Length: 160
Image 1 (cartoon, one colour):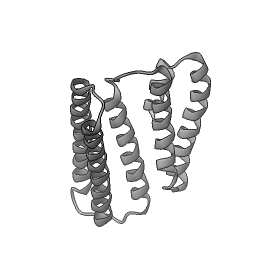
Image 2 (cartoon, one colour; image 1 turned 135 degrees about the vertical axis):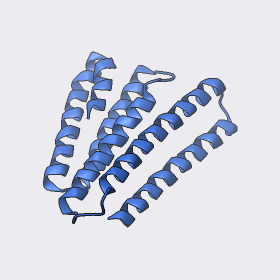
Image 3 (cartoon, helix red, strand yellow; image 1 turned 90 degrees about the vertical axis):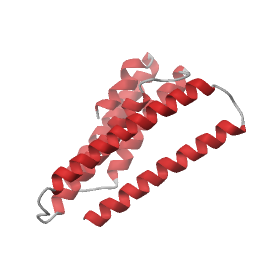
């Protein structure tokens, strides 16, 4: 949850006071999710941190943030590792090398997130236009991200 520190370090003083509380709630929610086995708290924790980052960008009116792919990787890794911890609570001994395969998949997802985030930032920086074409590209990108998340989730359920 080191990602929660990004808006804290860059935000104004008024934002900092509220963000400290949001980051604390997100951290406690994540710890409670792992300790108590409450998987429903993991997305709540991630959403709080991601929302805080988005609010900081909106308040400061940052046109393009080069740190966005790194923040995305931090959120992705936090969620994946939290769910992995929850899976390990109830898992029977698996196949040999299963942990290594899962580690490789998580690393591949992080690399893909960095690549996709970098490409999207470069594309947005080049386009810097408004209109229907840009909206369509945004919708396609959002659908692509949702498809990746759903595919990843279905693959994780097949493994378990």
